[in-house]
Image (cartoon, rainbow, N blue to C red; front, side):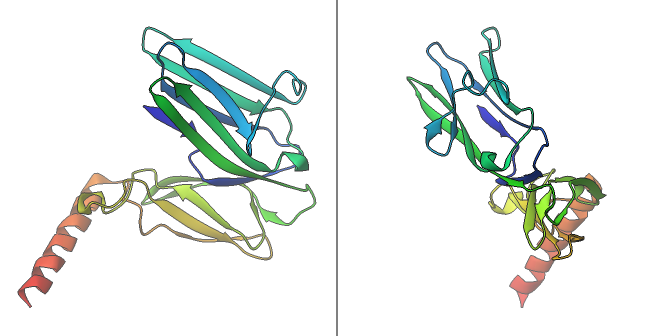
Length: 195
């Protein structure tokens, strides 16, 4: 078992904001956690005034969790961040790309939107960029052997305004609506099969 947050592959935030990454996985004796920026291990002791890393082991539930927290991000914090859990059984890695924008940059502000496909958390996104958010209820076609994870997209205009959400790959939040969609798809497939 392994989970990494944020689940988004890339996030953009504004200089001076706080940010937190976390990972949780199955604990076994000799399990180690290491955070990286790019390919370089992060030394939290050296950067203690700007960031904090905490790791906890729950031996009873056989879990290990680690949090990496920025008090205040700066432009030089832009990069790819990884959490690596390793033990004699193997290695698992979670990662995300962090882009830090100058406070004077034009961008779309982070927001939460509610749709018939669920609640989406959009991070600050540079003007002209595209944001991605994990579909909260999974892929609409998981029953067709599609990958269970799917992403919605949202463009940020050159003027720094959010555009419409493109979430057609996301399952519906309402189970009845999802069931009706599936029935319609099966009926549509049967109809084409008869032709």
